[in-house]
Image (cartoon, rainbow, N blue to C red; front, side, top):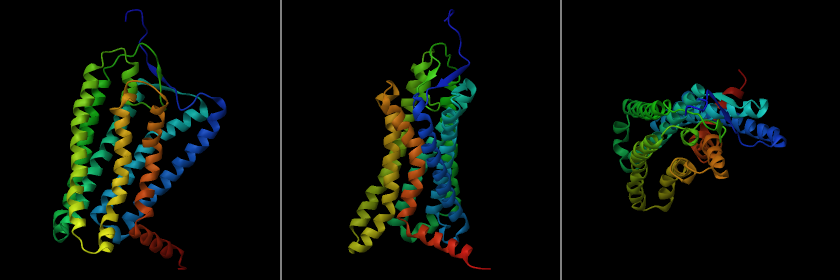
Length: 310
């Protein structure tokens, strides 16, 4: 340690160091980012302006769209900047800040998906008491708990990571700062930090997974008791979009933080990172809206309202 230089900044390796791929990658991810912004912003506008969508399910979906916007805007602009300017250095302070907000938004999405499962359980299994159970006060309280719990978890991990000393390699093998990537290049003892990720992250993840999938046990029982096949498929169709997002998100998160990629670098690391930080924020609004008749009807109402001559 006495003969090593303490690092003050890092070098983001990015997606590729091949010069001929920089422009195609820049244009490709710029297009994805613009579509992500447009689609998620459109969902938020529809939920806010259309009174027919002022129900708990779309309130939570609006929060999810806001998270996807934040998620994507935290990582993609920096990636585009590096691809365009080839300036890939980032200070340690900026890197730690990015880690904090990334963990914050990721945790929020995990907990919010659990809340959305509870909302679907209440709507399907207890329809007569739905409006009393999922009142606006309860919805706001649930979302507040999500944000506060996520802030606490992110703060704990970030405070421990801020004590790291970096004196070896200054290359982060990714296009943004993430906690497992900092573990690899730190010359400090990261055993406690890794243990904290597995204990705290594992405990909260296990709780979130339980709260996410347990309601579907009762939902499936309720749906199977419905006599009409048409009504049965209509009821369960409201859950397929949520389940699709849950499986994709949890799968990519588990691979990144609890899989072998958390300790050994290979090409799959970057693919997983791109999928849940760039692709998923674009897919989520598409999954929820393309098969949702309420969104289609709301869009048609807004379009007709704005296109009619005054």
